[in-house]
Length: 416
Image: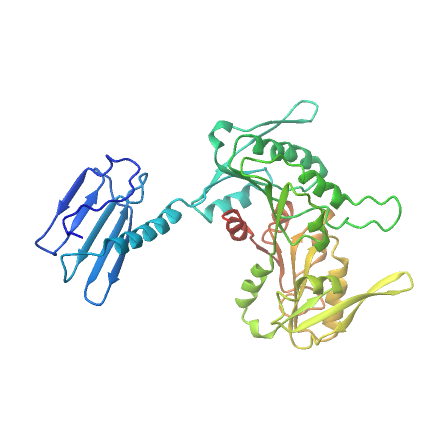
């Protein structure tokens, strides 16, 4: 192919290329295309070699234009160039550039309780934009909700960060959750870090109501957006079988807070002396595979008369920093009993982790700090995530509590 034959690339607008230049002094073949006076934002350079020649290519992208906007090529030893191979390489590089520059952008709405967490999520990625909702009430107490600039989210990827901390707030948030997919959006994601009815999934006696199934059925009827079913992001749901409660109109994405714990444990000065304790077989089944590189201790609840007592089932806590791991805590009675058993068997330190710190009636006050190595009296650390925002406000800056934020994990899930 002749060296002076013009290069042809798939510009959407045939008039886009407004300037070309040839410099035959510096290299045998050189042709450059630019776009008006726009500044170059991205540049990809590659080199094509064969047995005789070496060709260097640079692809430059101008914001707001087609990626094939500025091409430069040079041959080191020949006036001819294998155009088919060069065009293929240029196209592949430009497609990769397009995928990066056209990254998924999300409009993230939130309720009043999750505002702080939403701000942390937005800080994790430039592709997440916070959008507010006006949460008002009528005089009779029922919701009077308004979504500002609703037309502005048409064709956008939309997410809502929910917190079902009480039955009172579930209704008003469901009203928004049902409304957003109807606004001609490209896709809808519901982020519900804590699935609140998860502990009420069983029917042991005739007449018991499995409210976990009820809530799953309500969420399964969220209207379909233009992009299809709603995606649900939740963390460490209490009973694994609850994933089967959801219908086909919702796609549950089950995440875990355990990676946050593992990262935090690596930062401790005694990270090589840590053992993981599970308060019962249920916690062991849920989490032992994610924590299998740590020594394992398993406790068990046994009945003695009318009482349920925690005993050591297997493992050796003596001399170790033992971390009790479970998915959630409410009153904290089981955790406290587990702490006493581990201390009686010689644990040097005792800490605890739960993904969801619910703590009704301020039951977090039952957990005290060990004051420098007295595991029988308290905990060295009590890690929780910010899945329950009201609890986070209550325990902020109170030892032994430390909050591990789910913001990074949620941001990553939204970009899927």
